[in-house]
Length: 403
Ligand code: AMP
Image 1 (cartoon, rainbow, N blue to C red):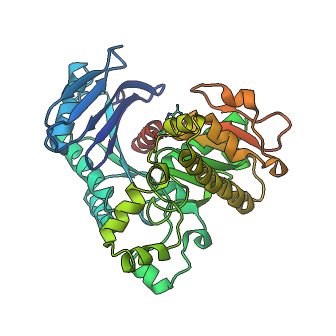
Image 2: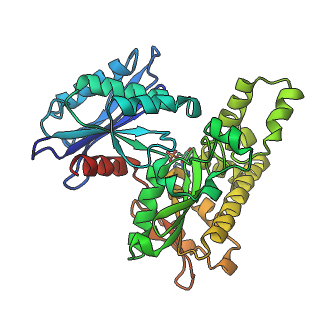
Image 3: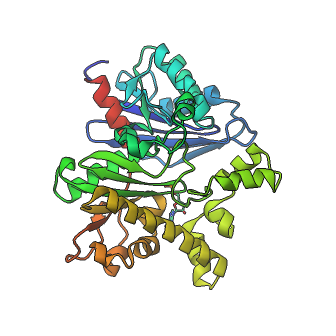
């Protein structure tokens, strides 16, 4: 890395998509952002926005066969703006890796041993880690000389005490198959809990925060003095809150029942609980905007879905208040948490005895900035804190390659 290398390319490789951001670490400026979707189909789409050049979004459609072709197309777009992957200003590539298991609790420079270990974790993250690996290998082939860093979704939760991380099942069976609660969305929970402390004018070590990451996927975490002590997702992202398409918490016996009585296969049950449950299973929509619109029109199914979503959220706020003992702040983040004022209002309604309240006029304000929405008298700060997983990945990557 040269002294002038201050840029980090962040890659988030999914099974059929690649999201990317090129960030200047001097001030966190986005130089370019983009997304390749439907990789492997005839109708692949690349949307690239050259923010540094002040340019408009450029969209191209047409078959992109695989991740290799996708990354080459991204590199060509970046090069067209003078931001090519061969630039000496590029310090590193930071990769989002979903599952780091017990081994990876920190961002890690990727070498062959690290790749092998990420591969060894495929059985516990069959949907995510293979795609992440493909993205890493493709990027390595393009810039073999450049540090490539893995930032793990599970890492922030590695501080959970054993009694929070273990399921109450036979220990030998659990250990033989690495079954335990790992948690996900860790970069978001880390970033948002830190930002919330800053909003309160405190050091992260001084505050206890409940972070509610409510996107299409959703998870809650209890963060005590900057360290995660509990989180709602488990072995996989299926556990916990009601999500856009996932059920969240469910009696495990439902799965036996579906198998024995409904005759469903394991794969069918997997699809049911991960893709056809949650809000979409309850009312046919997983977009909170649409659900609110339907509720305003008097749609009872949408209303029941909303109520189930809020009830679960409230249970986690209560549970994590008990886990933390003292709560200084509740922070809402991600697509729903940052934008859906009715969700924030309903989740906190009735919790005045716990020191939590939302001020209606503050809650109605729309902004991209971290902000308090609780009234001055409330003992617990309720905040909206926009997440920025890409910036967090870039910062962790940059800090590691400069260490
Ligand atoms: P994420 O996974 O963080 O990108 O969040 C995506 C989800 O955020 C969508 O499925 C919507 O349910 C929700 N969302 C985005 N914008 C809004 C909005 N303006 N109002 C309510 N919900 C929103």
